[in-house]
Length: 273
Image (cartoon, rainbow, N blue to C red):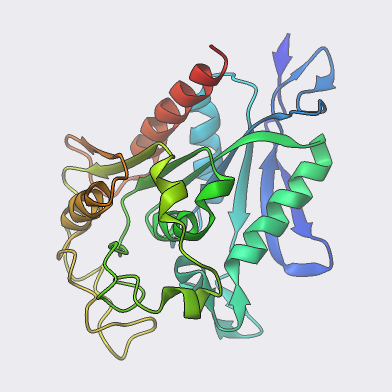
């Protein structure tokens, strides 16, 4: 009989109590946790939005995966550290002296130790988490097996003439890593957006605001426009970034997470063929 705990494990990076995560191990069979083999089972990382509803994302992803033996890791990026606002920092990978790429890799390593390793690793982000996810993949695509980006507020276009973060100029100097577009071309990439996710102003990040940029609106005024332009930018660089517009849906976590789960489930099933 297949089963898994309905209560994910709440853990922290070793020696770093500021950065926690929720971890739901792959379903177990006859009491044995899947993932103890040398190859391991797949891992899906779900990156929360500004509301930090990591539990909602994890639950919807688990539901959408429909019992498949997959582990799920939900980072809990802190909104405040030492009385200072860090709510948006993770979206831009490096902020306020924190390297969120390294933080995320430490979370993966900590979860891996719990179950004896993972096989393929898929990354999904919603809203602010979608900003984190596609920027993480720009530098770490070689470590991923697939990427799903849903409803990003701000996006990075693959434009070397635009400053980081609206574009890629200066990105390596800021992040401390080289972009890896070649590896990103080898990944399945899906972009999800609700057809009614059209609010403007809420996604603006003008000069003078945290992480503001003169070019913050270059990809469009709404999440819908930005998702479309991000898809076009990726495709123009040889990345097969397929765009899915969900009719009648606004900026809503559950429907886009279930759609993401269906896409990731298809990739996982293809692995087993």
